[in-house]
Picture (cartoon, protein in one colour):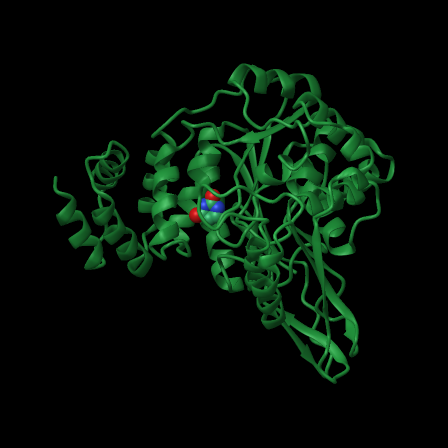
Length: 442
Ligand code: URA
């Protein structure tokens, strides 16, 4: 078999055989196929796509390229969750404690920030002392004791995805349905949970910008999960506006704590109740309605914040920061973005990807993979889409420890927020729910 012939086939929009897919993934991981040939293949897939069989074969080969985690030594139903990536998306740290309170086990491996999107592991590391790398034994122990542990992806989990993702990131081939589906589901299959909840983001801050593409991605991922014997549900959620008000690592941890204390922003709280409700449903805890009610109760009665504290303590973090988030170090510099134009109106739209990039420019994300993160950097939004604004209002505040970063970030933020005379149409927070053989649109 020759990689040249496989690339040629896909370039001409022909189907690849299972053997060809196995050959190209395994030989790429072993280093026998060079990046330049795999880049050409990724671009061919980006333009010509893959059918369901090709996607499913690629996912399985990628999953099996490394360790397949066996969670059987953890008692009870294990439910995993994955978001396709967004700005201000701190839902894992809210919903995992909620479901863990009800005895559902969450043994979760999360990612770091990617492009304009944030990552759960970076956010967690904003909590002083907290560790996100443990041996498998320690990881299982924490889950058995507390019901929950969130750690970084182990070195040998789906190494094919790690290598392919890094290549996609620099070859403009991230936004491809077959490639995203195989990337996410290979990790989920390798991570070993019984059920999977997928949060597929849609809108300007998501990799999938349209609802149709998001639904199609969700359908493919749900089918892969179900075909591999995992109960899988996907919610299509809004990422046309950042989620919550805070973007940036310790700023987002504060918002997690506020939300678990019942004082979070409405959009974030509502989405978390739906996501947690669906995780509980997947774990057979009742109907969706009952499970959503359970999720609400866990916030209202303080059960979930206590679970988060247990997890932080088990992972070596200083729980005083969760009990009193004002302890988080403030950044040295801040800048209010004020509406100067002489117009009164509404926030008409936000380019959410632009706000994610601005947050990275402030130091909250990495420009190159070796950059250190400034945990206190980021943006707090005072106004969001649909809010009434007038000249002189503070739209948002930027935070950083490096004053030189403020100017470029300010320009990026300003160009990412548009003001309109008329109130924009309100979009739902959740557009659809995709289950095996069923799509429910809201
Ligand atoms: N998240 C992933 O893990 N992979 C993708 O391809 C996109 C988002």
